Image (cartoon, rainbow, N blue to C red; front, top):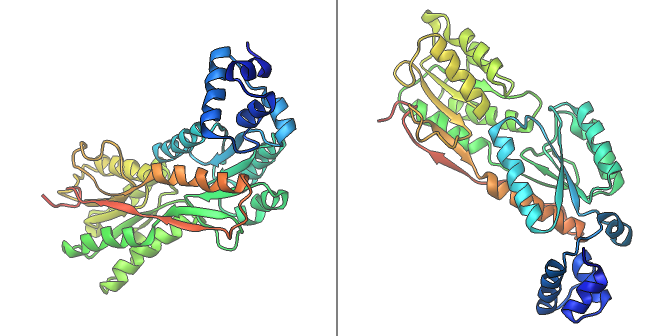
Length: 334
């Protein structure tokens, strides 16, 4: 395995220049930088991460705290963060918060003990009181992803939640539906409240009542959505003919529940959902759904974090990532 001196000889530069390139401590001419990187590869040089951290006060690692990692949406979000981080020479340290602020707090302590250079977090309910203050107090760069929390002084980015749900709910109304059910996500999350807000805006804008009996508490869970679907659609006399489902895990649970009741989508129940699936266009029925730009969200979150790691003192940014409406046939359209 080559040493830094070996790399310097092979590249025809000083050891100091090699150090600046490999540790990213000072800008270096692009041609010289490329020579150093090629020499490092040719000599088999491997950077000592511990030694680098001692010199630069950086570990070139970031902590990522996200709930429900088994959910394809969050798994894809983590993948997009890791892909961008890896391209910039960073590794990620993962942890599942289980949407529990106490669990999240312990996870953040672990991240800070590991001296990560920054954190990307999808905050749990209550995070602004329980877990985030310790990160803000530490001065560690922080980006919130997927969920906004007002009055937390850090960069934040999340998808547009309100208007997309207005769009899919209005579509059901335009198709003549008047009693429309909704399957809501985990309580206490801004994404849940915003999507419910969009549902209510569309219903009330059309002069329609939001029936509490038709509001399912799916808790962003397949099983809870399944159970709530049986409750809402079980009694034939009061059964609604349409439902808006507010995340992908609950869409699976809802469709399982409808199948259990021998109800067909869209013949018996029209269904629209927030969150798309890779196979949504192949599934039968093809799902009318809102797609989030997961790749953009993950890469932008890392870029925002890297700006802070590198010393940006600009005012915190609060960004909304646009979504895409896929009009298919689970809503009853041909």
